[in-house]
Structure formats: structure tokens, C-alpha cells
Amino acid sequence: MQAFLQQINDAAAYLRQFNYHHATAGIVLGTGLGQLVQQVQVEKSIPYHEIPHFPESTVESHKGQLIYGHIGQVPVIAMQGRFHYYEGYTMQQITFPIRVMKALGIRYLLLSNAAGGMNPAFQKGDLVLLTDHINLQPESPLRGLNAPAFGPRFPDMSRPYDKHLGQLLEQAALAKGCALKKGVYVAVTGPNLETRAEYRFLRMIGADMVGMSTVPEVIVANQLQLPCAAISVITDECDPDNLQPVAIEEIIAVANKADEKLSGIFADVVAKMK
Image 1 (tube, rainbow, N blue to C red):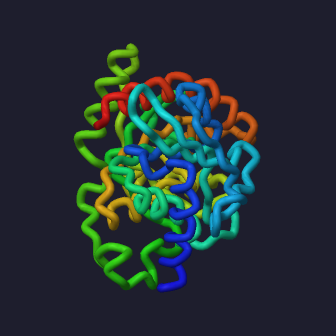
Image 2: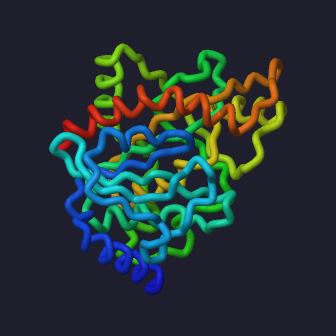
Image 3: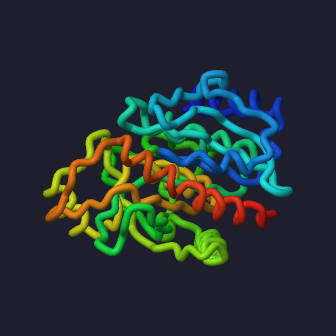
């Protein structure tokens, strides 16, 4: 535990040299979702491999850079690409950047992801605000971290997504003529997509969309008492009775198309943060 805490402190100390500790908000950009960077007045961009103890992103659509800059007058840190359990990383490695950003002083966290839509009301390109989640990944990122420095061992998860941030995202979306849908996200291991029987099961247990990320980061944010909100881009329609084969290239293309709208929503909300 002490070694992991030292790694967090090492990374934070390195980033303080470049003013990352001035950031108010942290942003995690998911698969095919990177256009927000165009709305950031970038002051520093550091490849993950240059930051002490940071994992490296192995997914092609994740550029693997930690960006510091401003959206309006608000200083932000943006993760241009995240880490996934299916890449072979531990849950603690996956969520390491969240702990580092918190150590640097961020007060809010916004996350995005690409997800398969199982709710029949969802279509490709829809933006869905996460209202809750189901964790089907094999372990918790809190496993083994029993020390006050990491936060409470048994954090409450009755409201994992911050209501106020969610309302701000809804308002920003409406101002752009886009009504956010709402849904429950289920996190699975991946990297394979799901079978028809699995989609039926996931829908039956209460999930509206399925993906391979976000939940570990949200669990850690809650342990750290860091308000967070997340939006999924629906990149494929997962109707088990009419299921069509899908390639990752198609998923990325749909995410790219929705990215401009999502980035605008995130930028509007961040610009209002204090």
C-alpha cells in the first residue's frame, strides 16, 4: 500500500512542475472521443509513458496523452485515452490517473465512453447520461487498499453519479438542441463483444447499455469523494433478435461522428465550473 501511495505522489510531483495542480476539473475521453481537446487552450501535453508509473494505452483510438489547459477560464486536465482491464492492467493501474488527478486537486470529474445500446429506445449516435451502473468486472479497484490515504474502505455507492453535474450536462445538451437520454451502464471485461444470450441477460438484470470501462474510475472517484458524471455514446444497437456483426472500426466511426456534440456539451459545463 505504501508503495502504491508513493507512486501516486511521484506522478503528482512530476506533473506539478507543469502546473497540472491548478486544474479544477478532470476529463476522461473514451474510445473515439477526443475532439474536446480542440476546445482546450492547451498549455502542456505529456505522453503517458513520460509520467512516472503511468500505464501506457494500447488501444489504437486512445492517443495516450495527459493534457493541461483551459476551457474558458477553467483549468482542466484531460486524459486523451484511458486504460482497460482487457489490456492486462490491474484495476489499481486502470484507476491510477484518477487518484493522481485528485492528488493534484481536481474537484470534478467528467467521463465519456462508447457503449452498445441494449435499450430498444437507443439508436446509434445517441448520448446517454449514466444514472447508475452494474459492475460485472472481476474485481474492485479498492481491493487491498486499506489505508486512510486512499479513502474509506467501504464507500457508499447509492448515488455514484453526481446529480448536480448531471443536471448541468442535461441543460447544456438542451441548449444545443440535444436531449440526453438516461440509462444504466453495465461494465464487462471484454475485449470481445457479447453474444445474443449475453445481451438478453444484461438487459434482464437492468442494464440499458454495455461497455468495458468507466465503472472502476467511478468507484475510485466515489471513494475519493470526487463528484463525477458520465455520458455514453451509443455506437451499436444490441438487439439480440436482430443482431448484426459489428467491427471496432464501425464503433469508432460512430463515436467520432457524435464526438463534436458531446465535446461541446462537456466544454459548456466545464466553462461554468468554479
